Length: 468
Image (cartoon, rainbow, N blue to C red; front, side, top):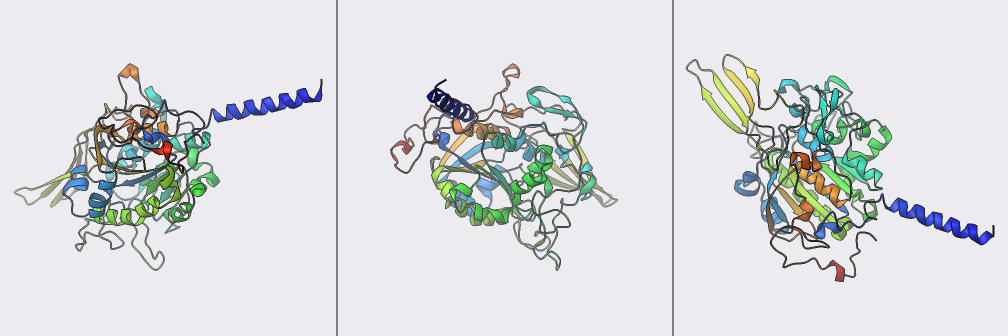
Protein backbone atom coordinates (compact mmCIF):
# COMPACT_ATOMS: atom_id res chain seq x y z
CA UNK A 1 0.00 0.00 0.00
CA UNK A 2 1.13 3.61 -0.46
CA UNK A 3 3.26 4.96 2.34
CA UNK A 4 0.88 7.87 3.06
CA UNK A 5 -1.85 5.34 3.95
CA UNK A 6 0.23 3.88 6.73
CA UNK A 7 1.08 7.34 8.00
CA UNK A 8 -2.59 8.31 8.10
CA UNK A 9 -3.52 5.01 9.74
CA UNK A 10 -0.81 5.51 12.37
CA UNK A 11 -2.08 9.03 13.05
CA UNK A 12 -5.63 7.74 13.42
CA UNK A 13 -4.55 4.95 15.80
CA UNK A 14 -2.61 7.46 17.91
CA UNK A 15 -5.63 9.75 18.07
CA UNK A 16 -7.90 6.83 19.00
CA UNK A 17 -5.53 5.82 21.79
CA UNK A 18 -5.50 9.38 23.09
CA UNK A 19 -9.30 9.44 23.13
CA UNK A 20 -9.47 6.06 24.88
CA UNK A 21 -6.94 7.21 27.45
CA UNK A 22 -8.82 10.43 28.01
CA UNK A 23 -11.98 8.49 28.83
CA UNK A 24 -10.23 7.20 31.95
CA UNK A 25 -8.95 10.59 33.07
CA UNK A 26 -10.93 12.37 35.76
CA UNK A 27 -10.37 15.74 34.13
CA UNK A 28 -10.64 14.73 30.50
CA UNK A 29 -14.29 13.83 30.83
CA UNK A 30 -16.99 16.48 30.87
CA UNK A 31 -17.88 16.56 34.56
CA UNK A 32 -20.97 18.69 34.31
CA UNK A 33 -23.22 15.68 34.87
CA UNK A 34 -21.50 14.89 38.17
CA UNK A 35 -21.08 18.24 39.93
CA UNK A 36 -23.48 21.07 39.19
CA UNK A 37 -21.95 24.00 41.08
CA UNK A 38 -18.62 25.79 40.84
CA UNK A 39 -17.19 22.81 42.76
CA UNK A 40 -16.87 21.29 39.28
CA UNK A 41 -13.78 23.45 38.83
CA UNK A 42 -11.97 22.02 41.88
CA UNK A 43 -8.82 20.07 41.04
CA UNK A 44 -7.01 20.11 44.40
CA UNK A 45 -8.73 19.00 47.61
CA UNK A 46 -7.18 19.46 51.05
CA UNK A 47 -8.75 17.52 53.95
CA UNK A 48 -7.83 18.18 57.59
CA UNK A 49 -9.34 15.77 60.12
CA UNK A 50 -9.40 16.84 63.76
CA UNK A 51 -10.63 14.80 66.73
CA UNK A 52 -13.54 14.21 69.06
CA UNK A 53 -15.43 17.48 69.26
CA UNK A 54 -19.14 18.17 68.87
CA UNK A 55 -20.61 20.84 66.66
CA UNK A 56 -22.06 23.00 69.42
CA UNK A 57 -18.67 23.34 71.12
CA UNK A 58 -16.47 23.73 68.06
CA UNK A 59 -18.64 26.24 66.25
CA UNK A 60 -20.53 27.69 69.19
CA UNK A 61 -19.73 27.75 72.89
CA UNK A 62 -16.02 27.00 73.02
CA UNK A 63 -13.60 29.84 73.68
CA UNK A 64 -10.59 27.69 72.74
CA UNK A 65 -10.81 28.04 68.95
CA UNK A 66 -11.16 31.75 68.07
CA UNK A 67 -9.23 31.40 64.81
CA UNK A 68 -11.58 28.71 63.54
CA UNK A 69 -14.74 30.42 64.77
CA UNK A 70 -13.96 34.09 64.17
CA UNK A 71 -11.59 34.03 61.20
CA UNK A 72 -12.18 30.90 59.13
CA UNK A 73 -15.93 30.42 59.45
CA UNK A 74 -16.71 33.89 58.00
CA UNK A 75 -14.43 33.05 55.08
CA UNK A 76 -16.09 29.76 54.16
CA UNK A 77 -19.16 27.57 54.06
CA UNK A 78 -20.27 25.92 57.30
CA UNK A 79 -21.96 22.53 57.04
CA UNK A 80 -24.10 22.56 60.19
CA UNK A 81 -25.52 19.03 59.85
CA UNK A 82 -22.37 17.06 59.11
CA UNK A 83 -22.05 13.78 61.07
CA UNK A 84 -19.38 11.25 61.88
CA UNK A 85 -20.10 7.66 60.93
CA UNK A 86 -19.05 5.86 64.10
CA UNK A 87 -17.34 5.73 67.44
CA UNK A 88 -14.57 5.69 68.41
CA UNK A 89 -12.07 6.78 65.72
CA UNK A 90 -10.68 4.34 63.19
CA UNK A 91 -14.06 3.45 61.71
CA UNK A 92 -14.56 7.10 60.69
CA UNK A 93 -11.21 7.35 58.93
CA UNK A 94 -11.82 4.10 57.05
CA UNK A 95 -15.25 5.26 55.91
CA UNK A 96 -13.71 8.48 54.55
CA UNK A 97 -11.45 6.74 52.04
CA UNK A 98 -13.26 3.47 51.29
CA UNK A 99 -16.95 3.72 52.15
CA UNK A 100 -16.59 0.59 54.27
CA UNK A 101 -18.64 0.16 57.43
CA UNK A 102 -16.63 -1.13 60.39
CA UNK A 103 -15.67 -4.61 61.40
CA UNK A 104 -16.16 -5.65 65.01
CA UNK A 105 -12.55 -4.56 65.62
CA UNK A 106 -12.18 -1.36 63.62
CA UNK A 107 -15.27 -0.08 65.45
CA UNK A 108 -13.21 -0.32 68.65
CA UNK A 109 -9.96 1.09 67.22
CA UNK A 110 -8.59 -2.46 67.05
CA UNK A 111 -8.04 -2.12 70.80
CA UNK A 112 -9.91 -5.06 72.35
CA UNK A 113 -12.33 -3.87 75.02
CA UNK A 114 -10.61 -0.46 74.97
CA UNK A 115 -8.31 -1.83 77.68
CA UNK A 116 -4.56 -1.24 77.80
CA UNK A 117 -2.58 0.69 75.22
CA UNK A 118 -1.34 -2.09 72.93
CA UNK A 119 -3.61 -2.57 69.96
CA UNK A 120 -3.98 -5.14 67.23
CA UNK A 121 -2.92 -4.71 63.62
CA UNK A 122 -4.14 -7.90 62.02
CA UNK A 123 -5.87 -8.83 58.79
CA UNK A 124 -9.62 -8.59 58.35
CA UNK A 125 -11.13 -12.09 58.45
CA UNK A 126 -13.50 -11.74 55.54
CA UNK A 127 -16.48 -14.09 55.36
CA UNK A 128 -18.28 -12.60 52.38
CA UNK A 129 -19.43 -9.47 50.58
CA UNK A 130 -22.71 -7.73 51.40
CA UNK A 131 -24.62 -5.08 49.45
CA UNK A 132 -22.74 -2.06 48.15
CA UNK A 133 -19.48 -3.96 48.35
CA UNK A 134 -19.47 -4.11 52.14
CA UNK A 135 -16.95 -6.56 53.56
CA UNK A 136 -18.60 -9.07 55.87
CA UNK A 137 -16.06 -10.23 58.43
CA UNK A 138 -15.63 -11.92 61.77
CA UNK A 139 -13.09 -9.30 62.82
CA UNK A 140 -9.72 -7.84 61.97
CA UNK A 141 -8.28 -4.49 60.93
CA UNK A 142 -6.45 -4.53 57.56
CA UNK A 143 -8.58 -4.97 54.44
CA UNK A 144 -7.62 -7.25 51.55
CA UNK A 145 -6.04 -5.91 48.36
CA UNK A 146 -9.27 -6.10 46.35
CA UNK A 147 -11.22 -3.70 48.61
CA UNK A 148 -11.56 -0.42 46.65
CA UNK A 149 -10.19 2.82 48.09
CA UNK A 150 -10.20 6.44 47.02
CA UNK A 151 -6.38 6.56 46.70
CA UNK A 152 -6.33 3.64 44.28
CA UNK A 153 -9.20 5.20 42.31
CA UNK A 154 -7.18 8.40 41.98
CA UNK A 155 -4.11 6.52 40.79
CA UNK A 156 -6.13 4.63 38.19
CA UNK A 157 -7.52 7.95 36.94
CA UNK A 158 -4.03 9.41 36.56
CA UNK A 159 -4.43 11.70 39.58
CA UNK A 160 -2.18 12.13 42.60
CA UNK A 161 -2.62 11.89 46.35
CA UNK A 162 -0.63 12.03 49.55
CA UNK A 163 -1.30 11.55 53.25
CA UNK A 164 0.56 13.86 55.64
CA UNK A 165 0.84 12.53 59.19
CA UNK A 166 1.89 14.57 62.20
CA UNK A 167 4.85 13.09 64.13
CA UNK A 168 5.06 9.94 62.02
CA UNK A 169 8.53 8.49 62.47
CA UNK A 170 9.57 10.74 65.34
CA UNK A 171 10.37 7.54 67.23
CA UNK A 172 11.64 5.09 64.60
CA UNK A 173 11.38 2.24 67.09
CA UNK A 174 7.57 2.65 66.94
CA UNK A 175 7.01 3.41 63.26
CA UNK A 176 8.92 4.57 60.21
CA UNK A 177 8.80 8.13 58.91
CA UNK A 178 7.01 7.01 55.74
CA UNK A 179 4.21 4.45 55.51
CA UNK A 180 4.53 4.08 59.27
CA UNK A 181 2.59 1.14 60.67
CA UNK A 182 3.07 -1.64 63.22
CA UNK A 183 4.13 -5.16 62.37
CA UNK A 184 1.12 -7.09 61.16
CA UNK A 185 -0.22 -9.21 64.00
CA UNK A 186 -2.04 -9.23 67.32
CA UNK A 187 -0.74 -6.96 70.07
CA UNK A 188 1.71 -5.06 67.88
CA UNK A 189 0.34 -1.49 67.77
CA UNK A 190 2.22 0.70 70.24
CA UNK A 191 0.93 4.00 68.83
CA UNK A 192 -2.29 4.26 70.84
CA UNK A 193 -0.83 6.70 73.35
CA UNK A 194 1.53 9.61 72.86
CA UNK A 195 5.19 9.38 73.80
CA UNK A 196 6.60 12.30 75.77
CA UNK A 197 9.75 14.11 74.59
CA UNK A 198 12.99 12.55 75.78
CA UNK A 199 16.70 12.59 75.05
CA UNK A 200 16.18 9.77 72.57
CA UNK A 201 13.05 11.30 71.01
CA UNK A 202 13.39 15.09 71.46
CA UNK A 203 10.02 15.96 69.93
CA UNK A 204 8.12 13.06 71.42
CA UNK A 205 5.86 10.96 69.20
CA UNK A 206 2.09 11.45 69.08
CA UNK A 207 1.44 9.69 65.79
CA UNK A 208 -1.49 7.27 66.00
CA UNK A 209 -1.84 4.56 63.38
CA UNK A 210 -5.62 4.49 63.98
CA UNK A 211 -5.83 8.06 62.64
CA UNK A 212 -4.00 7.11 59.44
CA UNK A 213 -6.58 5.28 57.32
CA UNK A 214 -4.17 4.39 54.53
CA UNK A 215 -2.42 1.89 56.79
CA UNK A 216 -5.48 -0.36 56.89
CA UNK A 217 -5.53 -1.46 53.25
CA UNK A 218 -3.19 -4.06 51.77
CA UNK A 219 -3.62 -2.39 48.39
CA UNK A 220 -1.66 0.54 49.82
CA UNK A 221 0.80 -0.90 52.34
CA UNK A 222 1.93 -3.98 50.39
CA UNK A 223 3.78 -1.91 47.80
CA UNK A 224 6.31 -0.51 50.23
CA UNK A 225 7.96 1.91 47.83
CA UNK A 226 4.65 3.37 46.66
CA UNK A 227 3.33 3.57 50.21
CA UNK A 228 6.46 5.37 51.39
CA UNK A 229 6.02 7.86 48.57
CA UNK A 230 2.37 8.52 49.34
CA UNK A 231 2.12 8.48 53.16
CA UNK A 232 4.68 10.79 54.70
CA UNK A 233 5.43 12.97 57.70
CA UNK A 234 3.59 16.29 57.80
CA UNK A 235 6.86 18.17 57.43
CA UNK A 236 6.82 17.33 53.69
CA UNK A 237 3.74 19.46 53.10
CA UNK A 238 5.46 22.85 52.92
CA UNK A 239 7.67 21.79 50.01
CA UNK A 240 4.76 20.14 48.20
CA UNK A 241 2.74 23.35 48.41
CA UNK A 242 5.51 25.40 46.83
CA UNK A 243 4.28 24.84 43.28
CA UNK A 244 1.01 23.75 41.73
CA UNK A 245 2.68 20.88 39.91
CA UNK A 246 4.09 19.47 43.16
CA UNK A 247 0.77 19.66 45.01
CA UNK A 248 -1.22 16.39 44.87
CA UNK A 249 -4.84 16.40 43.76
CA UNK A 250 -5.84 14.99 47.17
CA UNK A 251 -4.02 16.14 50.30
CA UNK A 252 -5.14 14.28 53.45
CA UNK A 253 -3.78 15.77 56.68
CA UNK A 254 -3.85 14.10 60.09
CA UNK A 255 -2.24 16.15 62.90
CA UNK A 256 -0.65 14.42 65.86
CA UNK A 257 -2.69 13.44 68.93
CA UNK A 258 -2.21 16.85 70.52
CA UNK A 259 -2.60 19.08 67.47
CA UNK A 260 -5.82 17.33 66.41
CA UNK A 261 -7.43 18.05 69.80
CA UNK A 262 -7.60 14.40 70.88
CA UNK A 263 -5.33 14.71 73.90
CA UNK A 264 -5.39 17.40 76.55
CA UNK A 265 -8.19 19.56 77.90
CA UNK A 266 -7.17 22.73 76.10
CA UNK A 267 -6.93 24.63 79.39
CA UNK A 268 -3.27 23.96 80.12
CA UNK A 269 -4.16 23.02 83.71
CA UNK A 270 -1.67 20.69 85.42
CA UNK A 271 -2.44 17.06 84.74
CA UNK A 272 -4.59 17.84 81.69
CA UNK A 273 -1.96 18.64 79.06
CA UNK A 274 -0.68 16.57 76.18
CA UNK A 275 2.40 14.38 76.56
CA UNK A 276 4.49 17.17 75.02
CA UNK A 277 3.22 19.71 77.56
CA UNK A 278 0.95 21.57 75.15
CA UNK A 279 -2.66 22.29 76.20
CA UNK A 280 -4.30 20.08 73.57
CA UNK A 281 -8.08 20.16 73.03
CA UNK A 282 -9.45 22.81 70.70
CA UNK A 283 -6.67 25.17 71.84
CA UNK A 284 -3.98 23.10 70.15
CA UNK A 285 -6.23 22.27 67.19
CA UNK A 286 -6.83 25.98 66.65
CA UNK A 287 -3.09 26.69 66.79
CA UNK A 288 -2.52 23.95 64.22
CA UNK A 289 -5.06 25.51 61.88
CA UNK A 290 -3.54 28.94 62.39
CA UNK A 291 -0.19 27.53 61.29
CA UNK A 292 -1.23 25.43 58.32
CA UNK A 293 -4.38 26.95 56.83
CA UNK A 294 -2.61 30.17 55.70
CA UNK A 295 0.11 28.05 54.05
CA UNK A 296 -2.52 26.05 52.20
CA UNK A 297 -4.52 29.12 51.17
CA UNK A 298 -1.36 30.88 49.98
CA UNK A 299 -0.43 27.97 47.72
CA UNK A 300 -0.79 28.24 43.95
CA UNK A 301 -2.91 25.07 43.82
CA UNK A 302 -5.44 26.35 46.34
CA UNK A 303 -5.67 29.78 44.76
CA UNK A 304 -6.27 28.33 41.31
CA UNK A 305 -8.73 25.50 41.97
CA UNK A 306 -8.51 24.37 45.59
CA UNK A 307 -11.03 23.20 48.19
CA UNK A 308 -10.08 22.89 51.87
CA UNK A 309 -12.31 20.78 54.13
CA UNK A 310 -11.88 20.96 57.90
CA UNK A 311 -13.84 18.43 59.91
CA UNK A 312 -13.61 15.97 62.80
CA UNK A 313 -13.69 12.20 62.98
CA UNK A 314 -16.49 11.95 65.55
CA UNK A 315 -18.31 13.95 68.19
CA UNK A 316 -17.43 13.90 71.87
CA UNK A 317 -19.23 12.26 74.77
CA UNK A 318 -21.19 13.10 77.89
CA UNK A 319 -19.95 12.06 81.29
CA UNK A 320 -21.86 11.30 84.49
CA UNK A 321 -20.38 10.58 87.91
CA UNK A 322 -22.10 8.94 90.85
CA UNK A 323 -20.89 7.61 94.21
CA UNK A 324 -22.46 4.74 96.08
CA UNK A 325 -22.96 4.50 99.83
CA UNK A 326 -19.93 2.22 99.97
CA UNK A 327 -17.77 4.99 98.49
CA UNK A 328 -17.37 3.44 95.05
CA UNK A 329 -17.42 6.07 92.27
CA UNK A 330 -18.92 5.17 88.90
CA UNK A 331 -18.03 7.18 85.83
CA UNK A 332 -20.16 6.61 82.72
CA UNK A 333 -18.82 7.97 79.43
CA UNK A 334 -21.70 7.95 76.95
CA UNK A 335 -21.65 8.37 73.18
CA UNK A 336 -25.16 8.89 71.72
CA UNK A 337 -24.15 7.37 68.37
CA UNK A 338 -26.62 9.40 66.33
CA UNK A 339 -26.65 9.16 62.53
CA UNK A 340 -27.92 11.06 59.54
CA UNK A 341 -28.53 10.38 55.91
CA UNK A 342 -30.15 6.95 56.34
CA UNK A 343 -26.75 5.60 57.37
CA UNK A 344 -26.54 1.82 57.34
CA UNK A 345 -24.78 -0.11 60.14
CA UNK A 346 -23.15 -2.55 57.74
CA UNK A 347 -22.99 -6.33 58.09
CA UNK A 348 -20.72 -6.64 61.13
CA UNK A 349 -22.16 -4.71 64.08
CA UNK A 350 -24.79 -7.09 65.42
CA UNK A 351 -24.08 -7.41 69.14
CA UNK A 352 -21.39 -4.73 68.95
CA UNK A 353 -23.49 -1.56 68.70
CA UNK A 354 -25.12 -0.53 70.96
CA UNK A 355 -22.37 -1.61 73.32
CA UNK A 356 -20.84 -1.00 76.73
CA UNK A 357 -17.35 -1.63 78.06
CA UNK A 358 -15.92 -1.51 81.56
CA UNK A 359 -12.49 0.06 81.48
CA UNK A 360 -11.76 0.07 85.22
CA UNK A 361 -13.36 -1.91 88.01
CA UNK A 362 -11.96 -1.53 91.52
CA UNK A 363 -13.59 -1.25 94.96
CA UNK A 364 -13.26 2.53 94.69
CA UNK A 365 -13.71 3.25 90.96
CA UNK A 366 -15.70 1.91 88.00
CA UNK A 367 -15.31 3.48 84.56
CA UNK A 368 -17.69 2.51 81.77
CA UNK A 369 -17.99 3.43 78.10
CA UNK A 370 -21.54 3.32 76.77
CA UNK A 371 -22.21 3.65 73.02
CA UNK A 372 -25.93 3.86 72.31
CA UNK A 373 -25.89 3.84 68.50
CA UNK A 374 -23.68 3.07 65.52
CA UNK A 375 -23.25 6.66 64.25
CA UNK A 376 -20.61 9.27 65.04
CA UNK A 377 -22.92 12.14 66.05
CA UNK A 378 -22.93 15.73 64.79
CA UNK A 379 -19.53 17.31 64.20
CA UNK A 380 -19.88 19.91 61.45
CA UNK A 381 -17.49 20.72 58.63
CA UNK A 382 -16.08 23.90 57.16
CA UNK A 383 -15.36 24.39 53.45
CA UNK A 384 -12.91 27.00 52.19
CA UNK A 385 -12.37 27.64 48.50
CA UNK A 386 -12.34 30.34 45.83
CA UNK A 387 -15.58 28.66 44.73
CA UNK A 388 -17.31 28.86 48.14
CA UNK A 389 -19.47 31.80 49.21
CA UNK A 390 -17.89 33.46 52.26
CA UNK A 391 -20.03 33.31 55.39
CA UNK A 392 -22.44 30.78 53.91
CA UNK A 393 -24.10 27.88 55.71
CA UNK A 394 -25.87 24.70 54.70
CA UNK A 395 -28.31 22.72 56.81
CA UNK A 396 -28.31 19.75 54.44
CA UNK A 397 -27.35 16.52 56.21
CA UNK A 398 -24.00 14.98 55.27
CA UNK A 399 -21.61 12.44 56.77
CA UNK A 400 -18.22 10.92 55.95
CA UNK A 401 -19.76 8.70 53.28
CA UNK A 402 -21.26 11.84 51.72
CA UNK A 403 -17.83 13.43 51.67
CA UNK A 404 -16.33 10.41 49.95
CA UNK A 405 -19.12 10.51 47.37
CA UNK A 406 -18.53 14.23 46.88
CA UNK A 407 -14.80 13.76 46.29
CA UNK A 408 -15.48 10.97 43.83
CA UNK A 409 -17.93 13.22 41.99
CA UNK A 410 -15.47 16.13 41.93
CA UNK A 411 -12.75 13.88 40.53
CA UNK A 412 -15.23 12.02 38.30
CA UNK A 413 -14.63 8.60 39.83
CA UNK A 414 -16.92 5.67 40.46
CA UNK A 415 -18.64 5.62 43.85
CA UNK A 416 -17.57 2.87 46.21
CA UNK A 417 -18.97 1.31 49.38
CA UNK A 418 -21.58 3.36 51.17
CA UNK A 419 -20.69 6.36 49.02
CA UNK A 420 -22.69 4.65 46.26
CA UNK A 421 -26.45 5.00 46.02
CA UNK A 422 -28.55 1.86 46.41
CA UNK A 423 -32.01 2.56 45.09
CA UNK A 424 -33.23 -0.92 45.97
CA UNK A 425 -32.63 -0.08 49.63
CA UNK A 426 -33.89 3.50 49.19
CA UNK A 427 -30.37 4.69 50.08
CA UNK A 428 -29.06 7.87 48.49
CA UNK A 429 -26.69 10.57 49.72
CA UNK A 430 -26.58 14.25 48.89
CA UNK A 431 -23.41 15.44 47.19
CA UNK A 432 -21.68 18.40 48.81
CA UNK A 433 -20.55 19.62 45.41
CA UNK A 434 -24.20 20.17 44.43
CA UNK A 435 -24.95 22.39 47.42
CA UNK A 436 -25.57 25.92 46.12
CA UNK A 437 -26.11 27.16 49.65
CA UNK A 438 -22.30 27.19 49.95
CA UNK A 439 -20.87 26.92 46.42
CA UNK A 440 -21.23 29.52 43.72
CA UNK A 441 -23.32 28.43 40.77
CA UNK A 442 -21.45 26.50 38.13
CA UNK A 443 -22.04 24.61 34.89
CA UNK A 444 -25.20 22.85 36.08
CA UNK A 445 -27.99 23.34 38.56
CA UNK A 446 -27.52 22.34 42.20
CA UNK A 447 -29.92 22.35 45.12
CA UNK A 448 -30.19 25.33 47.41
CA UNK A 449 -31.78 28.72 47.58
CA UNK A 450 -29.25 31.45 46.83
CA UNK A 451 -28.60 31.79 43.11
CA UNK A 452 -27.68 35.45 43.26
CA UNK A 453 -23.88 35.09 43.15
CA UNK A 454 -22.58 33.05 40.24
CA UNK A 455 -18.92 32.21 39.96
CA UNK A 456 -17.49 34.42 37.22
CA UNK A 457 -14.62 32.16 36.24
CA UNK A 458 -15.60 32.13 32.61
CA UNK A 459 -14.69 35.83 32.34
CA UNK A 460 -11.50 35.58 34.37
CA UNK A 461 -8.48 35.46 32.02
CA UNK A 462 -6.48 33.60 34.69
CA UNK A 463 -9.08 30.85 35.11
CA UNK A 464 -8.78 27.64 33.10
CA UNK A 465 -11.65 25.22 32.71
CA UNK A 466 -11.01 21.86 34.39
CA UNK A 467 -10.67 19.94 31.14
CA UNK A 468 -7.75 22.06 29.90
